[in-house]
Length: 112
Image (tube, rainbow, N blue to C red; front, side, top):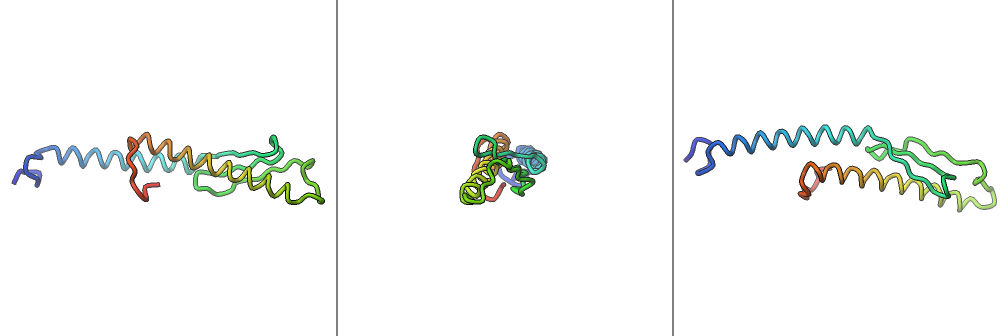
């Protein structure tokens, strides 16, 4: 058996381990960067604006007074949901894009 523990692998196993450790470090840094980022979604032409972070925590919801109609609460609820979903989708897409660049498109379940 070769010195690296696998026949025919030689020093390649050490290089592979170093690359894996480097990739893991880069992924941790990227996850931290995304977690600290803010993402925004809006609805009703900016009447409702929601902000979330990369951990998918709601940071704020801003509602313009002119869209608050006590006779049409359902519209306001729809606007809030739309803005929040848009912000969450943006956070998810950004996370996937950034991680995809690191992993080269590999699908690793449970990675992020």
